[in-house]
Image (cartoon, helix red, strand yellow):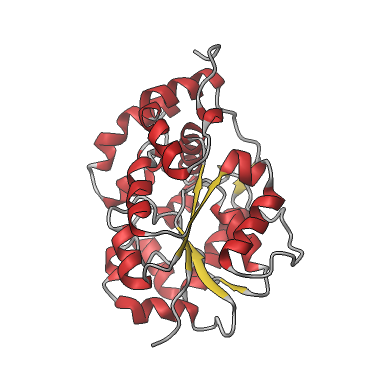
Length: 296
């Protein structure tokens, strides 16, 4: 049996997972696959290929003290806790990054606009989400602005399955105290926490596409997309190609900010009902997510 990972970062999407992947991949005792997001646990057709196929992503792990992956699509798959448990065992170390759900939704919304998938105003897109998601798997993945920010149900499932879980609050921990947070995660993974790392490693923020049709080719199912995927070899090379094209196709990285009143309104409408229990499960305060009395 080939080596399987000992840790998995399960999300959330748009909560710093790409930056964390970049930071951890620079640690000499940590191995992560070149292609972030294997999709093994979140895509049914890949999961059916079994543990031996999954282990192939870690064939080059060698003597790394900690091998793992970060795949933010995992968090909201309804079977994620069971699949992780069945494949990797109860001793698995799980990392969960949580971001203010309205900010997270807005960041995903901007990403969808950049990819040429979204034309609706932000709040209208949230209102249309249930109908859109019912259309099929593609819509459920790309228009899940609210669903991906309702953390309570997936956190409950993970808490019931695993004892070793590290929760990272995006605003307070990853942005506000990154050095302490990263050192704590390195200790959690059982590697040398004193190794100097580039803690500023991050990916470019969402922006507008110069040519939206190019972005849609990479993200909407189409014949052209299938041809490109078939012509490119490994998943790692597919990821490199997509990122290179996205960087070339960027226009003006400045992004519109989410209006504070919209932020408060979205939080109250879609997320406020689960925050008290979520705080208890992650054993940390989420007070900074709650709107102030002056927010409308």
